[in-house]
Length: 626
Image 1 (tube, rainbow, N blue to C red):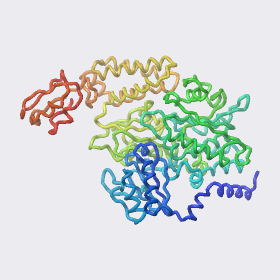
Image 2: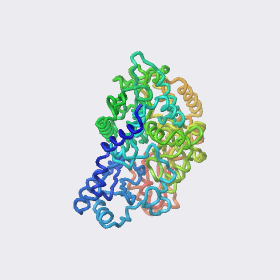
Image 3: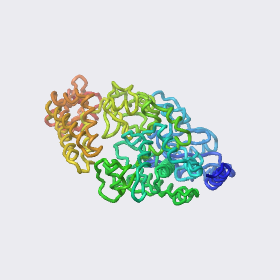
Image 4: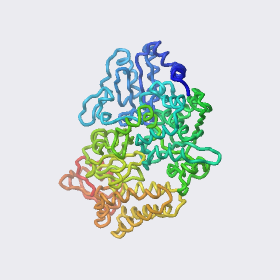
């Protein structure tokens, strides 16, 4: 065991070697850091051009010597992107374009004046907010998994180390912390897997630690195959803070006795893949990955494996089969991966967000983490907030926060004066939460009790214009396309379910079909091989439970209350509002509208193709759909 003096000497040497640029910046007098989001969302909106523009303008205006441009990960407020944050003032600029850069440098960087037109305005009140922490979007949040996203350069290991990065790994290896102590700390924290199932992370680590193989080989894997429609939590963590996952995986290897790790990441995430490659190379160069890490005798090697976009490979056994180089199909369980997983060896698998919590827990203590959240759901949860909501983006909230807080306070409410109708959590595996349950706490047990689930963290908001039958059909169609076809219940059952829902949205359904749908859902849940098939019926069952009247309207009245299902639509003209301008007639591609100038017109619904062109062009609000 090393002495305390030896430990401090090691840390000092590592810190001196790891943060040379920060010392250089302090010596050179860098006064301002210009943080520009370079996550996928902002990058697609020209944030890389903005970064180049800042570098060019700082040189041109003589401000380059004391300013530094940093490309960061996602800030979270995607609806306001591209975003720029300037320190030390902490001023936040939204909707920045390449054309705005010259003005920001001239006014803010050179002359110390705010560019007020680019400051954030709250969507409900219009109030101007200068700093991130003062925004309504951020105030209810608590960032643990996302703690470094938007704050550091994800391609610079020095910056990660400057915010306590790799300190947990260094402490564990230099102090030779017993593996069981690490696992015990994780158990005490109450951390549950954030990939969807919510199983105790500490217990999973314990199973892997206890398992034995004939040759002593074990593996640690990271599931970064994020496939839920609308979900981008894991991608954003990898883009903004890849070292937090790498450090946690190395610690996991030490705790369970594994020396090889794999990160299975979607090839459709090129920015995340690039930053992982950079981060792994940097960690190797610093001696934090590889053989004999920090002269401790512990070795841990880490490699990437790219997935081809199959949703089923998010299931743990299918993921491991894909890493092995075979078709990504699930295997029967038991045996579970902790006993016989990758290459038939004991394997620990967690997802990106789970690993992102680990070093926070080990640095601050299990009690600090367990104090956050609810009795059965500790800590925080990251959600990708999308759909009919003012503030789309990435949010992290303490477990137990209500859905109302997320939608009204963080999300800024429903745009256009529309009414909140439902929220879908858990993606294709989850369920719809109706407006009547908007005060439901977001935690594992509460969501399960109302027929939904946490899932990996997608949260899609819907308003009065969404048809819940169509929503169920959309998610089921996704599952049909993504089914690997290995088991009959999923291969045939999901397709049969989809056909019945399609029949209903075409106006050809019967009440007997509703009974058949429910019966088929329960058969599928109980007999499918993996979680894809077992959870595919959830959106159908939850919408049947909470929005059955919409199904009945489609079947009995041959009417879509939301006006979405085209076969059930009728466009009508209100004669009291119609001015006879003929604009609708001229824009109808099917010639379904007739009438004379300055007299009310009519629509022949036998000819109408339900394109909505007439409704869009009417300037008097005379046309509606029923």
